Length: 203
Image (tube, rainbow, N blue to C red):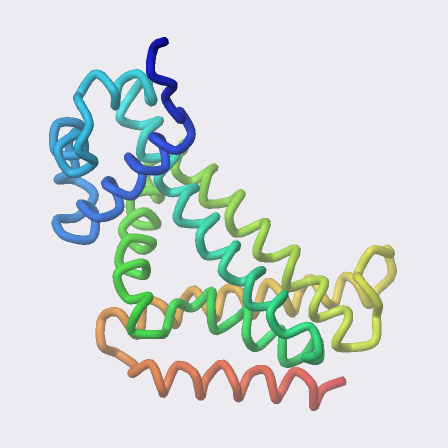
């Protein structure tokens, strides 16, 4: 019997190798040969999983976004007794990648963001990741402000979306500020907490 290959598992293994190389050398230095070496697979295996380097990079970017989103969902599920307001703060903190153990992930994410500015394919993948996070934040803002799950079509939902977009942009910007040393992680957390406190005071 021929050995069965876990195709999706191998694609994720290759994506992890891409991310490790991006963290070490930057996106421009990533080659198929280096990815194969880091993933401990053959060049042929990489090419069977991805038709082009662009497809491989797009999958790796989506992989990072899914990792952040899944981590958010796991943390929310682990604390079901929390209020929607505290859950929103938790989500914003996770998205901002402020903790030391997420610093490599922050470097990888920003490397892809920079590349996406001139790469329509990566930009489309990024937009999908941001859209998923935005929908989660919209729901939490709506719930925290007494608007339910945000499934209606009234002004409250529009306001919740505006607040969610603002918070997502703030968290994303703080990622860069911490990474380049403009703010410490503690200072960034203070900014997030101050914004969230002001959000509830306005309601």
